Length: 252
Image (cartoon, rainbow, N blue to C red; front, side, top):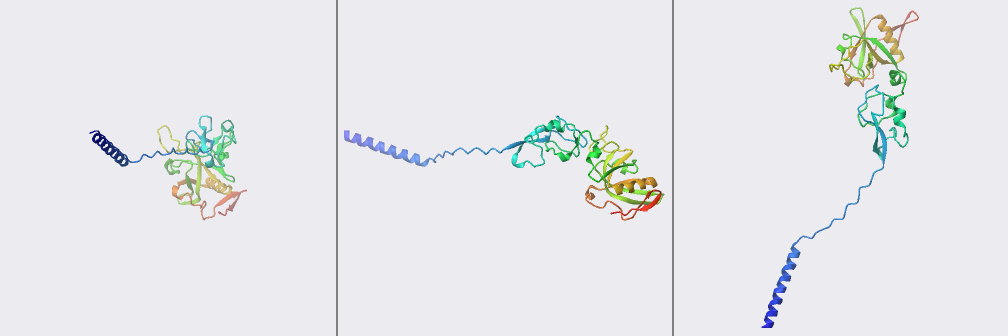
């Protein structure tokens, strides 16, 4: 009787062991993933950037520029870094902005005019001149010509003679306005001034002044798509007055 009992217990134990082995095999193996290695830390440098949108002729101050961490391998040599110029915030304060910059854009020396200098003189490229001409709404496309636009200059003599004497001329300013994003108190984007300041070379300046003395000038607004047209003068040869004599000026 005892033998049968032991045999029964052994059979039950063997069956339990076999069932347990089957259950263990049927369960998926648990894989413990090794922790990912930490991402490498890129070396950074502090770069001087605009802390807000900057307009042409706007002076720099501690409020509109700041240091911003920048990946070292993406730092352009023209950027201003804290490691090379730690006093840039103080030394550049008061400098004038030459061209529009957006918030977060790195500030570069080439985009700045020296402090205490005339703005137009500072932004004029070498060899260029700023010349003002009299304007009105009638001869400036109804007042829709703004700074940074490009125009053709038309000269009228008498009632039936009008020709283009200069082409693709940059407009630097309308009266004292040098920023084409400025608007009046009513939100209008038109500027009806009394003078337009144009960017010219010395020969073009002579042609313009002589034409203005002899007749009426009008500015014809050019499409932005035509601004890459390199022609800046008409094919005709205008005359200017030197020492009381009329001379022909050969246009390039």
